[in-house]
Structures are given as structure tokens and as C-alpha cells.
Length: 267
Image (cartoon, rainbow, N blue to C red; front, side):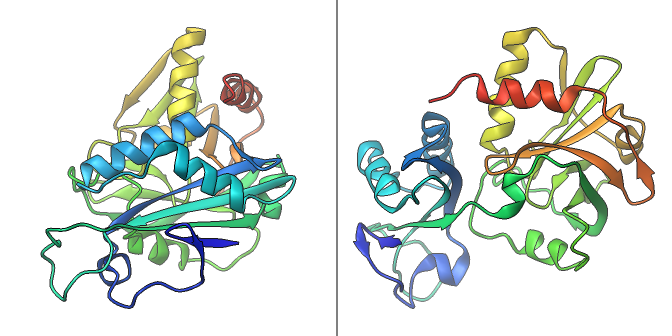
């Protein structure tokens, strides 16, 4: 089911700025029995991203009602897209903003119903650094599209991306965490990348559990020297990377720990 501004529809205006410029933000979340998981975190992130792009964020209660309205029975996925709406040709945003709100559902994909370790590869594409957009889940995802086009081997689940300085930022569709000598490390996303809700929940849980956590610059060598490498997002949870090109890892127990932490604060 697809709702556009609260009404069943499958089209948007051809002059919508989300289509023309990627001028908007989105969220992808899991649902269970018609209810969104981690709703408070998802809405808080949506509101923060809207504020960063000077978009009017939808009313929380009304948006949640739309999510529940489209949600699949059992387990599913809902995507929320918010654009700046229809505007005249040109980059200048309209003075009178009337955002377009799209809420749509889909079945939970097969890859999200498995906890099997994943195979990853290094991507050749380098992410551009832009602090104004860093961390935001905005609609202009051409870097991710081009990175994902680098492989068609179904055995490869994810690709790792570096920025133009060579620092590892994360996966094409997920955030990265590594474990080394009893401590956790995750890339600094202040220059580029998406700060996902699953990552946010894990960072909060590590503080709560007293597990040493470091956010900073991670070169590729740090990934290769890790005891365990993990990818996370709101749809797949935390998945262990068993192979990255020619490098392999055996389980070190961290993936189970992080998945437990991810779901211990459910709302």
C-alpha cells in the first residue's frame, strides 16, 4: 500500500523537488504486527534530518498512524519519504513550502530474515565529504547507487565504502562496527555517510553496558586487523562479516552481544 499525503496513490507531481533534485529525506523501518519498531528513534532522526534541510517535519501522531495503516501483517518494512514538494524549475526552494509525504510498505526481504554471516567487498567509489549533509538520510543517494552497481555476484551482500581521504565510512546500505581487543570502534560520520538508527541504538547501549567505544577515523588496515567486523541497519539488525574480499574472520561473540543490545530497548 502507498499513501501520498495521506491518500492511496501511486504517483507524484512531475515537478516534485524530490524527483528533480533529491530534495528530501527518508526513513526505512521494520514493522511487526502492524506496529513500527523503534519508532521514537526513527521519528527523532527524521525530525533532525528535516531540521538540517529546513523541511517541515510531519506531525508525529499522524505520521505513525499512516505507518500503521500501510504496514504488512506479521513482519514487514515501511519507507517514509518526505520531499520539499512541488516547485518551479530552478534550485531556489519555494517560499511557501508544501511538503510531499510518501509512506509505503513492502514484505520483509529474505535477507533480513537470516542471521547468517555475510560476504562483503571493497568498493572503488569514494564518498565525497560534505559536512552539511553528513549523517543525513537524504534522497540524493547516487553515490550508493553507483557503488552498488559495482557487483552483481549474489554471494556478496554488502560493499564497504571509503571517503576521498581513504577513511572507511561504512557499507552501501549499512553502518560499520568493528571489535578489537575487547573494545568497539565505529567510523566518524561528521564529514559524510549516514548515521543510521540501528547504529544510534547500539552506541547508546554500549554506554549503558559500559563497553569501551571509540568513534573516529578508521583506515582500511584497522578493518583488516579487527577481531570481528559487523554491519548494521534497521532492517537486518547486526550481521557478522565472515569475508571481505580475500580476508576471513571467525566468530568472536560480538555479533550476538550487539544484537541483544540492539533489541533490549524496544519501543
